[in-house]
Image 1 (cartoon, rainbow, N blue to C red):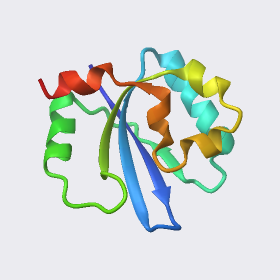
Image 2 (cartoon, rainbow, N blue to C red; image 1 turned 90 degrees about the vertical axis):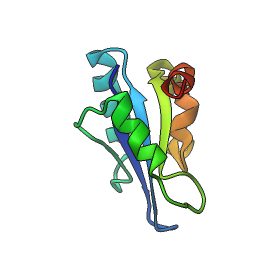
Image 3 (cartoon, rainbow, N blue to C red; image 1 turned 90 degrees about the horizontal axis):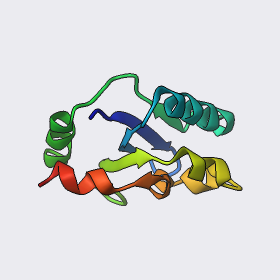
Length: 113
């Protein structure tokens, strides 16, 4: 299982948050990119092309320093594309870590067993 890093830049608060996502298929990844690109006029969001293993994610999270509002690195699990498609206001729903509401957390617990 591999993760992709989704980053949200919040200029207003001077913060950057990273969320590790899993895509079930190449089609889900493509659809995710289309949905986010459509609302990303201010380049608030990026999705890394780099693949992260569970061990790489663990290291980043374990070495994380103190943060203010939200952890700098977050594990989100599987992206549920259908939930994103059903959003009436995806830009609002993604704001301040809202990507978490579009992910299942079943993998979050396995990473630290």
